[in-house]
Amino acid sequence: MKIRKLLALVAALFAGMTAAEAEAPAGYYSSLTGKKDGELKTAIYNRIHNFTKVSSYQDLPKYFRITDVYPDSRRWWDMYSDIPLYAPSFSGLNREHSFPKSWWGGSTTVGAYVDLNHLYPSEMKANTAKSNYPLGTVDTGSSIKFQNGMVKVGYPVNGQGGGAAFVFEPDNEYKGDFARTYFYMATCYQDLTWKYTFMVAQNLYPTLTPWAIELLLKWHREDPVSQKERDRNDAVYGIQNNRNPFIDCPILAEYLWGTHKGQYYDGSTGGDTPVNPPTGTPDLVAPTRGMTLDMGQVAEGRDAVTKLYIKGDNLRGKLALTIYSGDKAMFSIPSATLDGSLANADEGYWLNVTYKPTALGLHESKFVISDGGITGSVSVTLRGECLAVPTLTACTALPPSSVESDRYLAEWSTPEGEVIDYWVVTRTQYLNGGGVVTEEIPAEGSPLEITGFDESSRETYSVQSVRLGYRSPTSNVITVDHSGIHDVNAERPLEVQGFDGFLRIICSEPQSACEIYDPSGRQVMIIDEVDHNTDIYLSPGIYLVRTAQHRTPVKVAVK
Image 1 (spheres, rainbow, N blue to C red):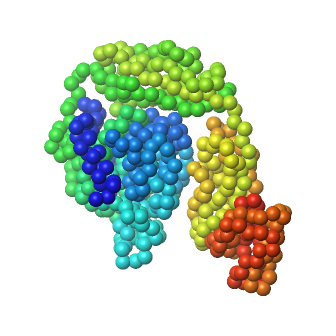
Image 2 (cartoon, helix red, strand yellow):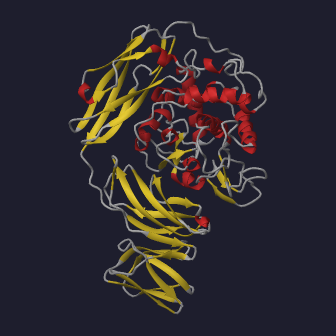
Image 3 (tube, rainbow, N blue to C red):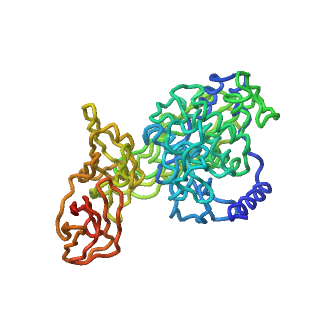
């Protein structure tokens, strides 16, 4: 039995002893009853699309320690590989958007960018291989691009893929998990404009394409909701105050896309258990007691605004809102009261909380909600950290790798030791039909996959790092076209000379990690160390050479 099977068994036993099945608060889904098809889907959207965003993408590992670690174990619960990796270290893992962020254009301002309902820890190689390919069944009769004993990437079986070259197939144990994640994303973000439509279409209903519906329903039925999903759903709710309804009420998928399509939803959960109707007793559904609203890190002299979701049932009169204790002077809200009817509304109410620090360091205070007819009060911890304004050094843009007709990987390096939140790649396309288009693309790190290269005759890119809202100076500019990489220069301490059948390294001192590329960006050779007058034998052609000491590629012709 595989290690993860053993851990999953332990987790299930532990969860069975300590936790009840995932349950939304009474009345959480009451607004869905009596609706069908697109109206039902929009009612779900109204229930879940407003939530408390986590402080930053960079902070996700600390939330994963709550949502994605095996019970009674420090091992990360990774649905992408069998490699044993342990918290709190996040080494070897990526923050994986299981629903690819490039599908909505990659914007960091969209809630999906930091929505824990589809963000999971993933082993790096598996995450890279997955790329932005859609889910699907890999055709095992053809060559498989990637497999690691759990997941596969390869050509899709007939009828799948939505036009993508490859598909990503999860392990059978988690196919239902991914299906319910995609049901959530197609509903919570039904109003987005899609850049890639492998599995989604530009409509509010059904949003998912026919082949995607068929595949996801199959996986949803064959791999029912697990205790892992229930526990994670509860944990995510405690962090961001919304839930995946397709975990709480699996039958909803059938009402929207399956066997119950066209029927009015009757308020059932797993199939038979009715949702308790509101009793009339005032109740505060969100925020939950004891949660923390993390404002993240703020540079000195700046402030941050984070939204706190407030949702009630049968609240009466006004809620009293109070900030007290600790560093209360550094946190503020627009008003000390909130009309209960605003919180009772189906969509709830989003309250702006401002953190404006007046000193460096960590700061905390308490936010309390009371009155409105509820018993007692609900307390939320407000937390933020003020740091000095960062000093950022320009990145070095490097030649791209894996250059293909329609895509390439933009690469860069960042000065060692600098703490970076994310990078911004400025891409300029010189279009085939004329015209120039420039866009800024947020990136988690180098390399960044650039697609749509076939629309351009050539392109350029430069890079800036971002920390606490401040940007570094712009890097040098790299130009890429379909015949190779341009704008590379030879400069000491490295020169390269081309001869008949070989090239010769000219250097003032030994060079390490010597890399040789062809004009398409494909790596031809890597040599641990080269010395002055080292000869390297190659086929005739144009090559680019760089070393650890000389990152600017040197272009040379071998005859």
